[in-house]
Length: 451
Image (tube, rainbow, N blue to C red; front, top):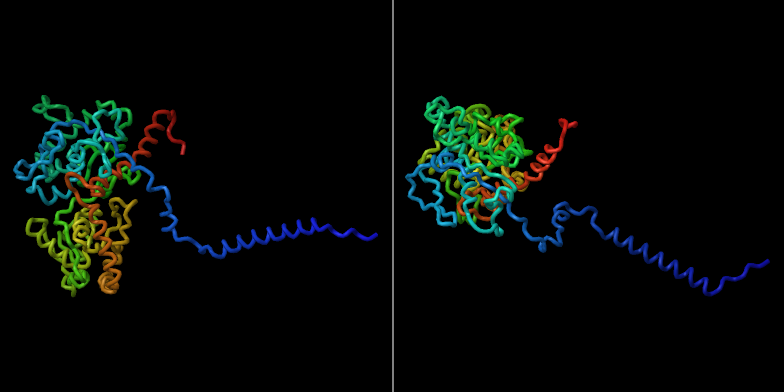
């Protein structure tokens, strides 16, 4: 029996369906073939079509303890002729005295953090932290104890009788009878605070920038957010990147402004510059070994000196006329020299096995710094050969990036957007979610962590 011929309508339907399938497959083939094999991660990370519509994050709300002046500004020299910063309400907050330079200035982070909280008014777009008077409205609590300055003023010689003053400021039970009428000391104040008690100090911010600061009673504040220069003299139980903030030293050389030579590479005739103490402890012992390797080499200035007035002036000139600035470890993995180099736009050459760097979640130091292991640095001629072989174009690129990031290492009052003080407070803000997690879990846990 012969099959019936398909109708015209059926043929048309089948033909139309085939056309539709062909069109869809052609579109898919075009899209696949015309798309790049892999979009660069930098492009993917920058695809934020709604970023412009998002309001800026509110500043961190900080409650500052009202400690007696002897815990902070009374330790500063009163011989300063500089104008005192105003806190906006007519009361004066003393300016950092120009006479207090050198080691005192390097570790004055505590002063600049306190000064930033004196500023009145709203947060605006330039401030990462604002002071609140109501502790129940605070995200964090700032303890304005100048622990670094206390060590430098009272305990620098470690065995000096004045060291007892540094110890007493940390805890009243260590006072002799002549101190019994004085106000309670720092740990007494904190232990009696219900805000310390409710969090075990986890949401409290305590500057401890000098490696010997707060050295008597560190274990009593090991849950707090500590502001440190590195972890060189801290146990793992006391300090870690998980909860603490690494802050830059306050640079002691003047910042290089208007650095726009027609040929920046040729304007810096010295290849490698170092000026500082060569006799150091611990990791810093490498300095003496480097002196034997680098001194008197062509293009190298390697000088032993102290951070005095004339020495700082010589270092300023040396860094500004050098392409690279050497940064070996000091008594601890870091030193102020790195930040002097950054504000001098001298490409840092970092030799330190355990250094931690400020703001490293936001700043990629490999873009403007060179890193060498101790073994590489002590290999004869290896370091210098690497520096000499760097193409001019690469050095200029690193120098340009140095100029762009140097503002993040400036301490000033009033603070400016993106400067060192605001960057430190932003780092503190980054720690708060983990702090709150620890506080909330601690309130309901009945047994120790099972993991």
